[in-house]
Image (cartoon, rainbow, N blue to C red; front, side, top):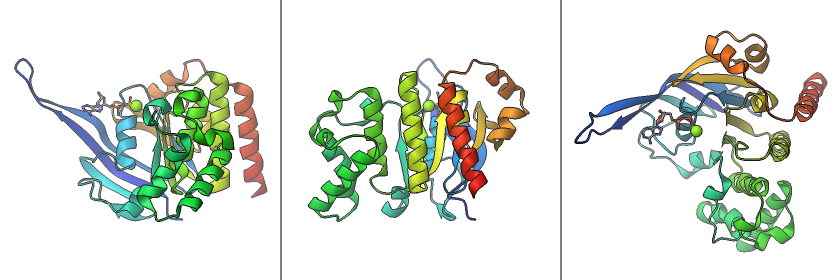
Length: 279
Ligand SMILES: Nc1ncnc2c1ncn2[C@@H]1O[C@H](COP(=O)(O)OP(=O)(O)O)[C@@H](O)[C@H]1O
Ligand SMILES: [Mg+2]
């Protein structure tokens, strides 16, 4: 099967200009990483702050250009250098950020926030836009009355549901989730993770799930890539990486205490096992 997403030797350097008192220098943020994700699966990218996760996320979502490498979406090579991309290819990949408040326009009502991608990217008639936005609101666990409210009237978890809903309005193939629950309380984290898991099953979505939290990664991932200073030091199935980590960095990382709700994680793992046993 052709993977939904494939990256080959992706490199990103940031050139920082010098000033009066400092020399120009280059930050090697991503140093040639390879990855691929099959349809309906989740690749988790884990690593400490500054290891290059968000840089990679911005390349995959075509927000920022790469310095070198090849990116394929549904087997089709994408121009990741000039950013000269068709709307079709951009629509296939959507992103959800850590801080939903920063990414939602505070002056817009939720309904308008959800309809906006349809207005910009499609010719969907107004009445249908409204229906689609309302349906998506329900799909992410919110209610019709929320349609006319503003972002500040919601909790952090609800705002992240809105950001997820907006990301799904154009029916993407791939969702890149950059620390989507890191700013939320633990109990709310579990709810949003469950929502993401349910949406993935229902819509057959492919995820790149970025986190620095291993318990969250264990819950969500099919495959895991561990990044360390811009390199993928470990890459394998969740079982391989968690049960038999090869790299010293991964072992050190795993020595940290788990955080997320263990019962929820167990329930999710049992469900995944049941699904794969049935298929
Ligand atoms: N726009 C930028 N300009 C210069 N350096 C950057 C920029 N964005 C990120 N970096 C640097 O690239 C490295 C990786 O950053 P980032 O991808 O944000 O890591 P992470 O998301 O894993 O915390 C860091 O050293 C960071 O300082
Ligand atoms: Mg980041």
